[in-house]
Amino acid sequence: MERTFAFLGPRGTNTEEAARLIFRGESDVFRPYRTIPDCLEAASEGKVDYAVVPWENSLEGSVNLTLDWIIHKIDLPILSELIIPISHQLSCAKREYPLALPDVTKVLSHPQAVAQCHGFLRDHLSHAEIEYVSSTAEAARLVSEHTEEPWVAISAMQAVHTYPVTLLKENIEDAENNFTRFIVLGEKPLVLPEADTHKTTILVTLPSDFPGALHQVLSAFSWRRLNLSRIESRPTKTGLGNYHFVIDIEHKMDDVLLPGAFAEMEALGCQVRFLGTYPVFIKKRNGVELSLRS
Image (cartoon, rainbow, N blue to C red; front, side):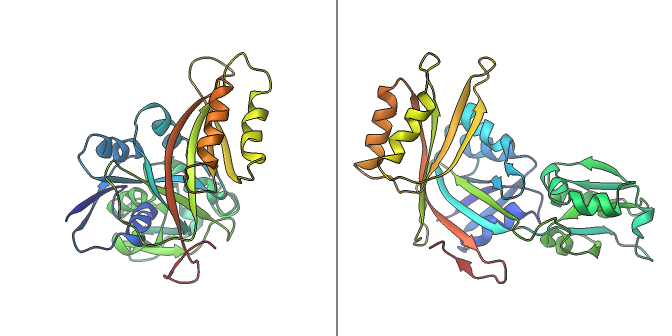
């Protein structure tokens, strides 16, 4: 049976690599979309079965655009998490002589990639203009089409292989421990390999008139010995100082512990929205083999 996946495109992005990490069926179809909202909207409207989007980076934190669309715009469950190592490459359009860094006038890339390469840019390309585009692959595509311009792109190696560009510098990211979490969302059940690790993600909105509510929320997990791997606040957009909290719990949805914690929070007047319970997959940095977190 054909399965269709939307990913942040064009071809050659880290999101595409994440999507292809475990979805390798002969009938799997991958469709690039220009923006994260476009991916999520396509899945929400049934144009594709699933959306694969970036969720959090180990250097730059959460992808707020993904968070806000999941909180405010769509209602799709998270079905899986994919974690891959991220390396950034610097490239220019193919030309008779390679472009020298002092001659570069513009650097194109996604804002997250630029932030993850801040040290390299400061040391070697501080004179160049930074132009943000919708994805790292889009940066490579644009640079490849402007062969007469002294422009460079920061992109994944997949984009270097996909578009007619010349690799100038490899692995220009500021730190080796650069990983990005991607999530898969969709309405249809998804058959996945076995995983040793699972997470559950919820959205909690605190009551406005309950002092100490966040402490009480955390206590609901603490005394049950449920580990939280992330708690992230995002504005409710209803007034200054009002927040939602996105909480990742290192526990698969069960019949006792998590329902009990949710009921305890609701008794405090909190709103609890279930965002998904899902397996976690990790790709090794030093090879193509898929590694499951132990």
